[in-house]
Length: 260
Image: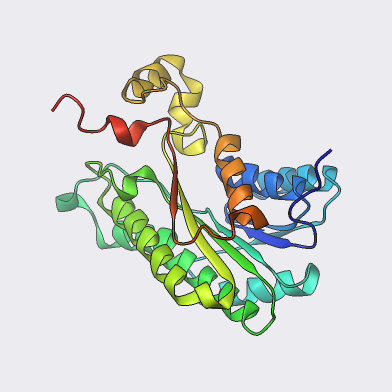
């Protein structure tokens, strides 16, 4: 039996009530980390994540968070430190999907909601996390969950695409800023993953079959396949990976442009 790689580590995972966030929180716990499970509205899903973490023999706390509120993010970091200890791993997973509205019809409110959730929120979390680690002497790992759409635009997804591209560039900028502070910052860019963001494909096999035709592997990924990458990036084995994007997409991005 291999020794867990994340013993004595404390992780924060946003959007950990379902999908990639839930799978990542559990994967980190299986490697020995205690986990703060953040959720926005689905308390029941968050409680299920906590139960799974506790079944791994690890500690977990459930915290509701509106990550668009910088003061709330700062309070959350304080709560995690009080209840579990100093956070050393941050997984910025929470986000909202594209709404399919073209730019000419997109309201200020819809643009702001997406950018504030998908970009401001991770920024606030990264800032508070780094401030907390500063001077502690502990190593830190930040893993941001972006998307293949940081590179591949979709019509009707201007705010989503901009937010994920912005988060990718926040990741690389932070990597340059904190490398000497013993903090790793990387991001994971999933393709089509069977999470609530792709609920139609989960519910209807015909929808799923149509969508996967542009994926060379001819299938969607699972949250667990992304979570394995997250857990690796948080581990000591990934210490020399810095400012990188790990794409988990079944070669979807390689398919784009073929046949042009």
